[in-house]
Image (cartoon, rainbow, N blue to C red; front, side):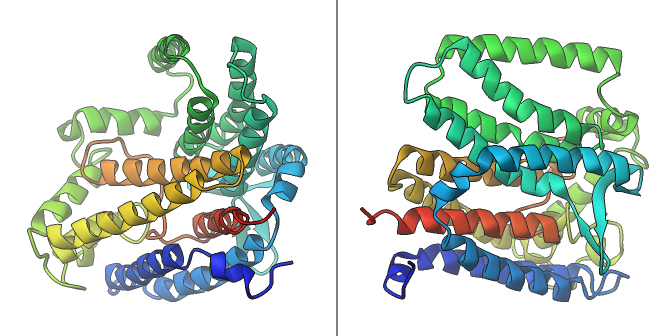
Length: 366
């Protein structure tokens, strides 16, 4: 039972950091969409945060060992849901990623699959009993993550597909993979990636165009390179202190693409400058350090695996999103955790944080 005394072990400091980031998100979405047809999305995002907060507290009351116990069944259901997307999913802008639910709600299964994979991978490495990783173990781990990756990539959704990889990476690192095994895996991935790129059969034309634009943004400044060019202009024009809320010319002039989701960090840089961006990055640092501390104090190995899996996904999303905003990474359509607008990604983050809270509260339970 989780009485009032149990919530004394709730990570209220982490929740405070999350609340501050959520507040910044709502105000930045408001500012970035003020003179656009998307004005009002900040109210929706506030609703997403409210629902997410309720879910976080609810999930924090569920013993994470029970979640590990049903992880295999959840994995089967997640595969079925991804297949269902291919069969009956709603197609938007050439991609079939959502299932339409009553009430105008669109459910994106690929987001909650991340959570399932974190649990499944934690259970898998826990069951190995701490023994030295062998090649069959590594191949099984790759298969566990690889099946949903292939299904999501076929939607197509390269961005979400890439977010599954940090879960596998964290599992392998914590599981004790050896340097020689890492070298062989990297060599194999490079060969597969080179063959896929050369043949052009594994990437969609627009995905290849994004990579080409990353390598040479000036090759198609009004096409595939447009997003990155406008984003870099917005970031640079913010200077040290920024132009002020609702005063970003790139953002308000509708030059910056989708400034409330994928490029919200560019909008923030333009309006609040280097100082504002640094403060947000510092807040991310505090959140991730707090999560890592919870992983270090987890009551058992699966708890550590789960928290670090969550850390891996969130850090990867932040790194790729900010990297593409400043031109260091190809555009991948990955939202910025806790800042970008979006119901599915927000729900995933808060449910994941709820599991972290449960793991923390189990530290002193015999």
